[in-house]
Each structure stands twice: as C-alpha cells, then as structure tokens.
Length: 61
Image 1 (tube, rainbow, N blue to C red):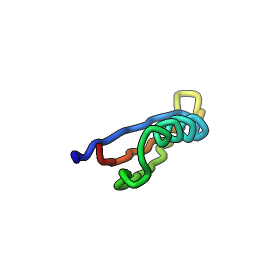
Image 2: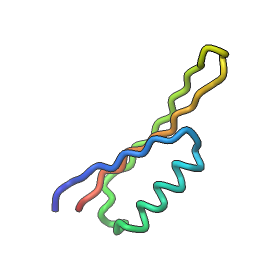
Image 3: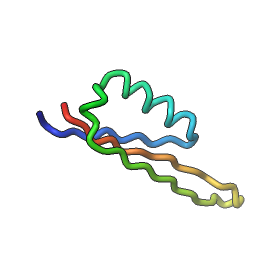
C-alpha cells in the first residue's frame, strides 16, 4: 500500500470538520497514519481578522 496525502483548507472550522468527516466516511480508520492541524490568522487592510483552518491527513491507499 502506498501512502497518500489529503489537504484541507477552510476559512471556518465547521467547514473543515464537515469536509474531513466526509473524507473519513470513504477511508478505513486503520488506514489513517497521521493527522496534522494548523490555524493561521492574519488581518486585512481594515484590521478584520482572517482565519485559515487547515489539516493534512496521511493515509494508506
């Protein structure tokens, strides 16, 4: 079995959860090797905060 990577990147944490849960429905839990999670924050010109929620899933395919 080869290793593969699936990357998710969303502005809202609920969107990230939804997309990851849909992916998990297609993959056997024993094939998941590792999950990395990260949150990035920046400000636009009006000083509004912009969030980036991302996750990387390493799995066997």
